[in-house]
Amino acid sequence: MIQKLLFGGEEIPAENSQQGSAGSLQINVGMLTLAREAKGYTQKDLAKQIGCNQSRLSRIEAGELMPQESDVQGFVEVLGQKRDFFFQQCATMPASVSFYRKTQSLPLKVFRQCNAHMNIMRLEIEQKVAGTNLQKRELPYLPPRENGGAPAVAKMVRQKWGIKKGAVQNLTQLVESTGCVIVDYPFPTTKLDGLCIRAPEKPPIIFLNKELPKSRRRLSLAHELGHLVMHNEPHERVEDEAWEFAGEFLMPAAEINQRFGDLDLDKLGQLKKEWGISMQALLYRARKMERIGESYYRFLWMQIGKCGYRVNEPFEDAIPDEKPTPIEERLKPPD
Image (cartoon, rainbow, N blue to C red; front, side, top):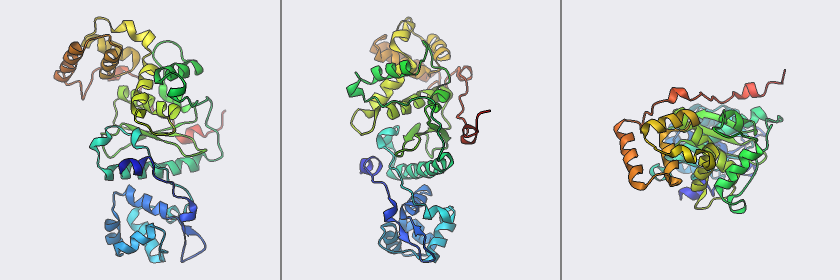
C-alpha cells in the first residue's frame, strides 16, 4: 500500500479540478489534498475543523462534488494556504518510497505528510525558476544495468565532471551546477535523511534533513545524486545501488583501498577529516571492500558505540559547511 501511494501514485492533472461557484477559475482538488496532508490532517480532521460532513469532503476531494464558497474559505483559514493555492492548475508528484531512509519504521501518515510538504515547496521553487536555466553541467542518465553497475556509473560521473583524485570538494556546489536545487529542510522525523523529487521538464530537487551532521549530509547528498543519475523506475535494488554509487563517488576504491590498512578509531578519525565522510560510513566501506574481517568490523562498531560516536562523532568541525545556495542568489544575472 505504501509503495502504491508513494511510488506508483498518479499525478493529479488539471482535468480533475472543478469549476468554482464564485467565478470562472477551477479549484484543483489535488491542491486541497496536498494542503490537508501537509497539515497532517485526515479528512475527518479537516471536516471537523471547517464544520463539514466528512462524506461531503471526501466527495469534494474525489472530484465528485463542487465545493461552495464557504468550503473554500474554510480551506484557506484552516490549512494555512492562500486562496490562489487551491486554484493552481498544477500536478502533484508522488515521492518514491525507495528514496526514503528507514521506511519500514515510519507510519504511512508521516510519508504522506513529508510528500505533501515536499510537493508544496517544489511548486514554489518551480514558480521561481520558471523560464530560467540553472544548469551549467550535464546531469547524465546512466542505468546501472546498462553501464556495468552502480560503482562503474559513479566512476563515469566523476570522469565526465572532471573530478580530480581524492575527496570531492564542495559536493553541494557540484550538484547545484547540474541545475539541481538543494534544500535543507526540517523533516518531521529524524529517520529521514533526504529525498529527491523531479517533475517532467523541471529541475530536480533534493531535500536534505537540516539536522544532519556535515559528514552524514555529504553521503546522503551523494546517495540522492545516485538516484537522479541512475533511476527512473523502481526495482528491489534501487537503494543498494544508490549507496554503492555514493560510496564509490565519494570514496573511490582504487584510491582509498590502501588507506584502510591498520584501521582503528584514530585512523577512522583521520580519514574522516581527509574525505569528509563519517567514521561509520568509512568503516562500512572498509568492510564492503573486504579490507577488514567481520569480527574486527564488529569490534570497531562496539568501540564506536562505547565512545558515544554513533550519535556525536568527533572531527565534524574539520569538515567544511557546504550550505545550499539560496534560489534568489542563483537567479541573479552574472556581473
